[in-house]
Structures are given as structure tokens and as C-alpha cells.
Length: 173
Image (tube, rainbow, N blue to C red; front, side, top):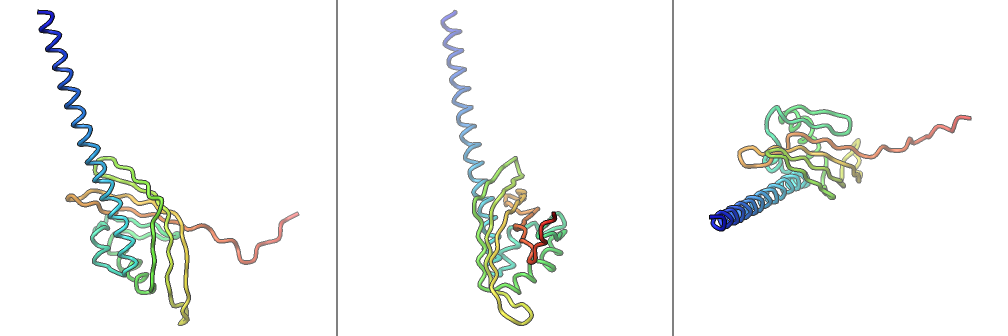
């Protein structure tokens, strides 16, 4: 009887260990897929901006009032505000744009993800009728939600380094 109980216990523990390993492996695969999908959504956002492709952008941004954008000290609330008062004007002003994300770090929690990243941007623009080239970069944070099986950016916050004053004040004695 004792031998039968030991064998049964060993078999049960082995089955639990195998089941846990399979479940853990599946969770890891799902997380890896979700992490890749979040990265793809972020990179597609950057590519849509480079290509001035609004339909592509609309595939990765939340197209409703839940969207918030904080960029360069300005806020946009909702897709329509962001699209009409930020995205479309910038896409129209910038030509030959290169927009690159690097050092992307993604964190997942169920149907929510957040990412931190560095960005660089380069573009040709018109300023008072004169062409000029701009180069910039900074840091960004994105929050995404998985909606209907697709990751959508619901919040974006980016900032660029502060510029030194053009005429620095002399040091005070």
C-alpha cells in the first residue's frame, strides 16, 4: 500500500511539473509574441510618419477619445485632435523624413503594455518660405492596449533635451 501511494504521489507530482512547464512555456511564447507585436506597432507608427501615411498611422493609434499625446509641452486629447491638429500638419510640413526608434524597452501586463525608447528625427522643412533641415532626438514613452487582438497606442509622451539659451546670462557674483 505504501509503495502504491508513493508511486501515485510521484506520478501526480510529475504530471503537475510537466503541466506547469507547458503552461509556463505557452505564457512565455504569448509574451514573446505580444512583445514583438508591440514593437511592430511602435515601428509602424514611426514608419507611417516617415512616409506621411495617415492610413498606416490609423492602424496603430487608438482612433477614439481615449488617446492622449504629450509632446514638446503640448497636449492632444483624442484621435481627431491629434490627427487634425498635430499629425497631419507635421506630415505636411516635413519632407525626406527619417524617424528612428532605438533602445526600445517593452513591459507587458495583460492587455496593457508600456515602452520606453529613444528617438531621432531628421527632415526637410519650410520656414517662412525658406527650406531648412532639422535634426533632433529625445526620449519617449508609449502606453498600448490590446484591442480586438491588435496593439494600439493609447498614450504617447516624448521630450527633447533642453536647448542652451542663445545668450546665456553672465554668472552672478
